[in-house]
Image (cartoon, rainbow, N blue to C red):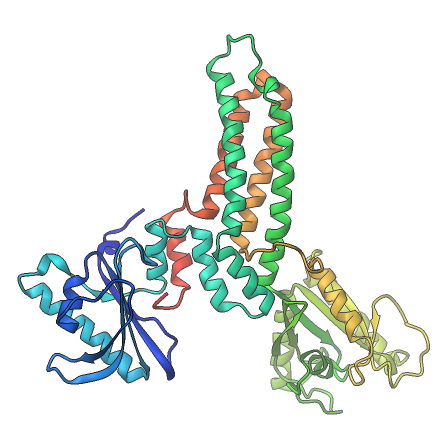
Amino acid sequence: MSLPRHSDPIVAIATAPGRGAVGIVRVSGNNIKGLIEALFSRPLKPREATYTPFLDAQGQAIDQGLALFFPAPHSFTGEDVLELQAHGGPVVLQLLLARCLEAAAQISLGADRACLTGLRVALPGEFSERAFLNDKIDLAQAEAIADLIDASTETAARSATRSLSGAFSQEIHTLRNALIHLRMLVEATLDFPEEEIDFLKKADAHGQLSKLQQTLSDVQQRARQGALLREGIKVVIAGQPNAGKSSLLNALAGAELAIVTPIAGTTRDKVQQTIQIEGVPVHVIDTAGLRDSFDEVEKIGIERAWEAIESADAVLFLHDLTRMNAPDYIAGEATIAGILATKLLKRVPVIDIWNKADASVAHQQPGEGLTLSAKTGVGLDALRRKLLQVAGWQNAPEGVFIARERHVQALRAVDEHLTEAAQHLAAQAQSLDLLAEELRLAQNALSDITGEFTSDDLLGVIFSSFCIGK
């Protein structure tokens, strides 16, 4: 799995772009002591912060800051790591980065070439990739680093921290160990078919497999919740002009994000805001009113509205209670409902929302769905609960760890293989070879989550989405 570039020493600015109080330049590689000598003319004490000037090649000060040296293997990457903590100005950090590259180049040309060759700027996620390749973290933990950085809610951040600490990985290892034990029993039966003792029956293979499936079901449920925390759900507000779509977005967001006027067609393009409901990110999109229009700009907005609707996880079909008896309005509602039924997959729920309850003279809800007032806020809590229900969120689940869609798919594959294995186990001797194969495939799918059986292509996709310097 290791590539030639993995032996190169690497350097990068590890803090976010822009100005800040503190900025960090990080170096990682095998035996970087020569670089330290070139930068400071003396060694650094391991794991001890040293306050020192950072000098350029001419001996002029770039900045003053802290230098920390973490010798291998006791570092984040498992290699020698040097961190330079300076003032967080972009120019200062670029100068420090250039100085590291310059000093390494000079070392490579000199007698100490073997100590440090080929220092280069790190690729996105390459420090975390080194940590994975050097067995400091597994792949699920590496992904949790990026998920922690990208977390949009407190609940998502806490769940990412739980995964980073190894909680999710431990669940996978527990499943894997139980699976290996069951495979051992099956293969022992295959290796010694002449034995009178039925290894599988004596060891309660049926019970072990059933327990394994139950444990897997629990992990799957929490992984689905974790994936929901990471990805959130995409909710599109759709309906005719002046139904109150922009008002509903503003009410849910608690801010005046979209322009609201009594003029039909005010919203010409999508307006999106991410809100959180009990820690779950909900990406709410307000769209142009759906109607026939001769205005070229509005027509483009309506086309984009339909594109957003087709990619939604849920659609809020907003109705206007004050116009519910108007013939033209009723005809428009029927047209939109028909197109929604045609364009949307059956799995995408359409929630009917009856708005303007504060202005309507109707005393009864005209159909299925929710009645609310975007203006006064009445009914918004019921809508929030409905969105969580649609998303499949369970209230305050215990032990949720952050997860990705690939983890959910891998666990689903494990479930399918174990289901097949149960059928072969019931057939006993006639299907033991097939039983062993299904258990092997289930183990491989589990190992793919933590990176024990992972292609270089997948690693490239995962780590390329990281920040440079992580």
